[in-house]
Length: 149
Image 1 (cartoon, rainbow, N blue to C red):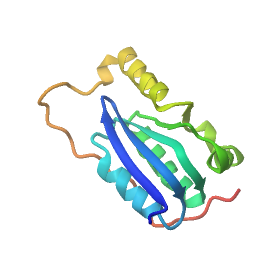
Image 2 (cartoon, rainbow, N blue to C red):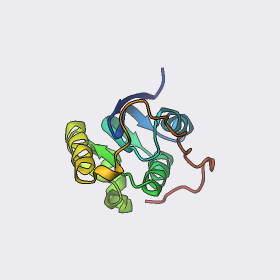
Image 3 (cartoon, rainbow, N blue to C red):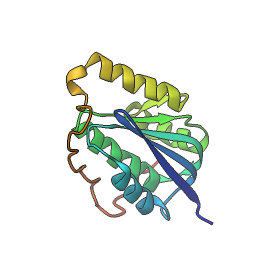
């Protein structure tokens, strides 16, 4: 039985990742790959529904930071929703909670993304049959250094 369940949903301007279980060294590469493959456009916001996440170690944090760097490079943000327990503590201890947009629910995060798109219509992707560009990839840097804390 996998320790991490991963699903995604596409919305206008955002991809929502629904995660449940533990995000650790064992599943971090799979999550990294899942995020890379599920993204449609580099400028889409990434929303991680963390309600079902019970544990996250430094490697899980690394995957979220890689997603943050990629999103920021394209003018988007990473939103974490329903963060609680040890994952919330890890982000608070490291101070990295200041880099992510935190929300109590995925619905609120989606409303925030929709509000940002309405406020900056020139940043919205064209509607209809426009060809999509190939999304950038998350950096493939292997396990990398562990974040202490």
